[in-house]
Image (tube, rainbow, N blue to C red):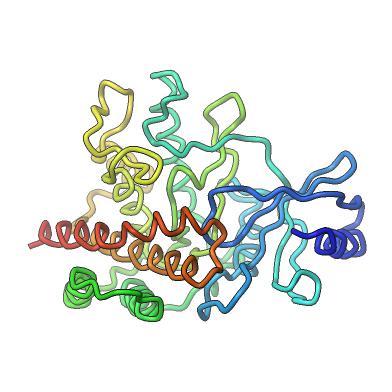
Length: 340
């Protein structure tokens, strides 16, 4: 943020939020590829600002107003979230909509192998991840005022249509595997089973904030893709991430000896989730897995396009992530074959 932007935000915040102190500087959080996020630093006080990125954006993308709404609604639930302060929808302040929330002291983990933790703590972190996911899906939509947070109808049809359209809008090269995966998903959509819950949309370990010196989950971050939908998409996204290669880019557990490293198996995570939510079994889980590979591929295609257009939050990393789109398409097709 430029000095003029910092000054404009500071003036607006002090005029809008009772007790707010002037902002003197801002530090950008690294790593995010969607809505740029900053630590705002003032006298004896810090905040976190999350804004829409600059440039031409896809319709319905980067909806910071929805992020603000859902986290504010979850304040009194079992889902840990940061406290929302104020939302600004006046583009004249910063050039785009933004919101300001509290900064929570905590740590995040990029690597699901959790090498920085003791062996006994790794399973506890996975259990926290499981507990919070179940809590998201058990949120009372009526009591929280979120019953209208997403449209009705078949969630997977709606999501497939949306992301296929956005994928086509950001296409930079022909990927036959992605075309085939979209066709397979369209032909194998499950019947609507009536489950309608809050879904995070991008639930993974690095979107959770844990206690600075413990294993308690303190906050779920990055609610941009949240809506009302089907809970198995969130669950499958966790399993999908773990099936990726280990390391900074893949952030997965493929080939890792999980037992020796104190980590949960996919089956244990799914079974524990089912017990927490009173479910007996999840049929055709590979459909949900294939869907998550498709959606992540479509998201990363958009990240790549923003990098090429000069609008990415971290252009170099965005290009590296975008290079994985063909792999997500291939693995989505592999998951699809497991349903047949």
